[in-house]
Image (tube, rainbow, N blue to C red):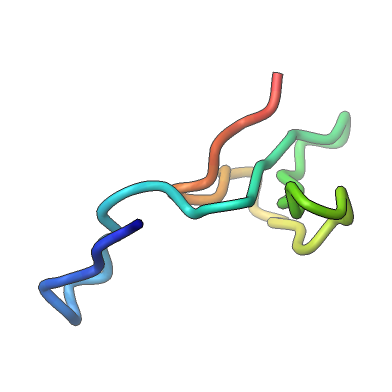
Length: 56
């Protein structure tokens, strides 16, 4: 389980559970739910999500 203390420092200790991310051909990063396979969120700035594992 991820520990987020000390609070307020904007840092996560550990991975986000049951999530993965992949990069689209356009360069955007897409977050996916590992249980259902549905896409959840897209980042438009070209940087990957923090703390989410990358798919191969």
